Amino acid sequence: MDSRTHLVEVTAALLWRQGLRATGLAQILDESGVKRGSLYFHFPGGKEELAVVALRAAGATMTANIREALSHRSAPTAIRRFVESYARQMEESGFHHGCPIATVALEASTKSEPLREVCAAVFAEWEGLLAARLEQDGVGRRDARRQAAVILSALEGAMILCRARRSTEPLRWVAAHLVAALEGGRRA
Image 1 (cartoon, helix red, strand yellow):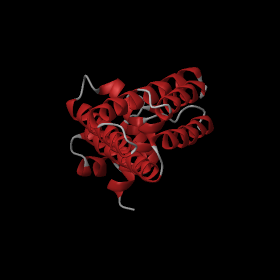
Image 2: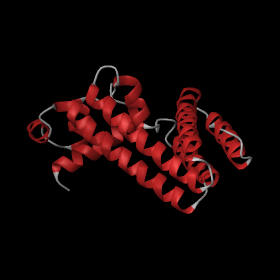
Image 3: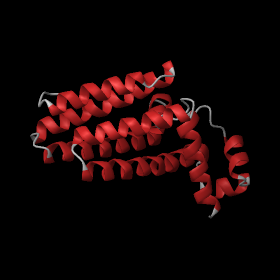
Image 4: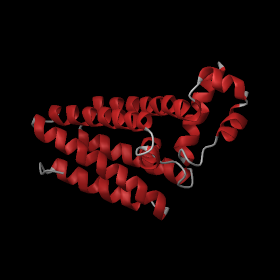
């Protein structure tokens, strides 16, 4: 694996686990084994540029998982399975594993336009995938877009509560509500 790819992977894992502020260049270099000069060769904009690329990579991984889940299942079933998988990952990581996009959006979106833009783009892609699945499930286009925003907001908010409480209950409660609302034909 080349040093650029390795830097991106290590940074994405660190952002996933601890967020942007807690991730320093020294830690990235130490964990990747890459020299400082190589980092700046590949990322002349330093930590911010590297974080943007790492967030795109982390977002792409999650997007692929969401796309796969939604292509084979109804929205309620996909939500149920996503929550079970994510709750397990959170518990196994001691609640260090959160959403890297949400973490960075909360930390840096008012201070860095490139980071805000990548977070917004990833969230928009996830909303679009959810809305498309809801439309396939018979929800009208306008309602599907609104419901997708509510679903994403509820799940992301629940993950934040899970990390703060060190419990997956909020995520499971939100999922149960969303699934019941979707299966009952009510607005989520």
